[in-house]
Structure formats: structure tokens, C-alpha cells
Image 1 (cartoon, rainbow, N blue to C red):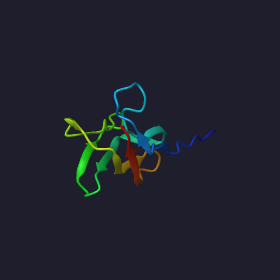
Image 2: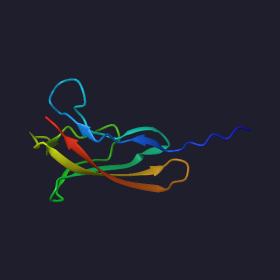
Image 3: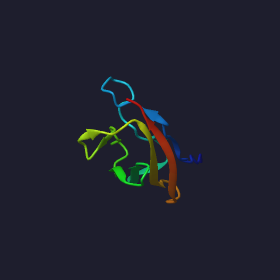
Image 4: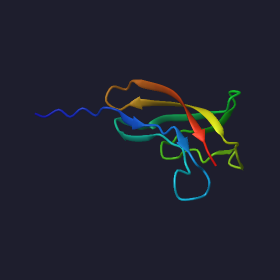
Amino acid sequence: NIKILDHVIYFVPNAFTPDGDQYNNIFQPVFTAGFDPYDFHLSIYNRWGEVMFESYNASIGWNGTYNNMELVQDGVYVWKIEFKERMTGKVIEDYGHVTLLK
């Protein structure tokens, strides 16, 4: 028997440019293996702690707008992701920052 372990592998970019070209318009974590897509939560906060964006779907990322209306200012925003490991059921919470450049 061969036992294959499905370890969590993911990458979170540290910058994106929602300027309308075809490159880096959306900020979202990139998962390659090991996470439960039905137990996912992404939050983006501004420097005052206000929630700028939330998603419960790993395939939907932040396009740099607030309330899907107006593009926010250039700057650094804090992100938080929570997701569950597929193999163990352990909930992982990760934090970081992303720079928005126009």
C-alpha cells in the first residue's frame, strides 16, 4: 500500500495591481493542495481595522474595491485567511499584508 499525504500547500502574494490590464488584477491566495474549499474565509482590512472585503469562496479574490464600487487608495492592507486542512480537519489561521499599487 502507498499512502499519499495531502499536505497543505499555498502561496499568498504580497502585492497586486488592479489597474485594468491583464496582469495581477485580483488578490487571492493560491492553493495547490490539502485545503477544504468548503471551509475557507478571506478578510481584507484597512489600516483602521475596517473590513474592506470578505470571501468564503477560495476562487473569488479581492479586486481592490470597497463594496464593489470604488477602487481604494494605494497602500498596504492586512489580510487574514482561515481554512481547514483536508487530511486532519485542523483549522489554520494565517495573517499578512498586501500592497495595492495602481
